[in-house]
Length: 223
Image 1 (cartoon, rainbow, N blue to C red):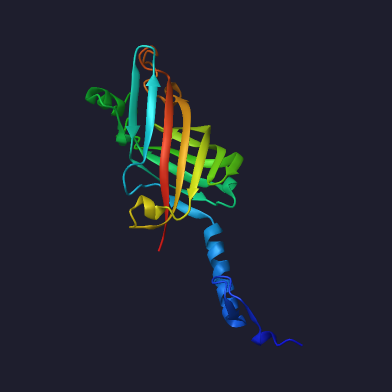
Image 2 (tube, rainbow, N blue to C red; image 1 turned 90 degrees about the vertical axis):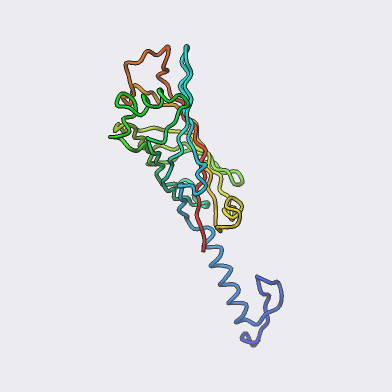
């Protein structure tokens, strides 16, 4: 019978012959690494670079209002092997919403509109995911969640595209951090009248529909 303990096998990491004990050690390391890379990860969307932002637009017949928000945080749990199990919550600091006109910004933050002194956060929390399709690094899905604005919470279903970029955190941070990236993109519409945002404003000057566009990068650092 063959002496198994003395048998030489191929090391899966180097491709060179190795004794069984060394081969088993290398195989275990490979399995552990593969398991770690395939496991669900938590991505932090509080961007250290400060460039994550949401864009909003109200396009009325007489006037178009455009602005941004950059006070974004939250976490998303994503499994590249099972993207349909997506979980998480994205939060926008209401006071970070900005429009170029100073008086308009004052009104936007005031009681008739966002009332940022009382309602400090705008948020979307995932409750379920459907129609998941993955091609390469991109996953598209219809994500349903609880959208909260000015103290009003409504269920919304929005289209989402997720781009999973393993090992790319170093490229984004100029080598200061190692890890993976998850880029989240979405474009959807809400109605300001449904959230108590100055519902009496004339719609020829202030559109009832608010277009929201998000392009956010979340980080999962590795030590």
